[in-house]
Length: 159
Figure 1 (cartoon, rainbow, N blue to C red):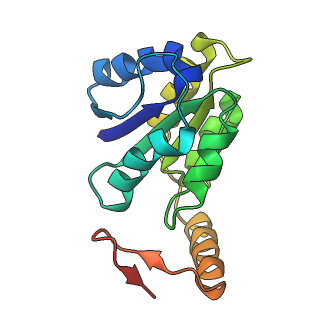
Figure 2 (figure 1 turned 180 degrees about the vertical axis):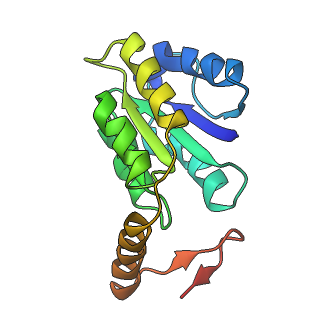
């Protein structure tokens, strides 16, 4: 699987997740920062999110101090279903029932061991489809009914 990864300055310690993804056989595109010099999380999230919108990657992993900022940025993008998870149940269910294609983790107040576990669960869990697919379609319909178009893999708005 092809994964886009990005982190901000608060999550430099989480960059070990890139190695873990690669060791599991995934190709990783790294858009994160390597120093603790302050950056704005929307700026470092954008390239990874663009990759999934344009079909260049299968999933995105974002890490910032709280996990919240990155998840808010991601969920503003049509077609992104980003789950900010802090426990194994949320990691599993975000894939199983919500088919999340973006994972947001926090680096503060969360051990790196737990983040590794959450990433592993999220990557290994399959989407159940069925009634859950209907619900995802309803989410996209709400977005469309609010006047927010969906983007195809070429970045063009669709209806």
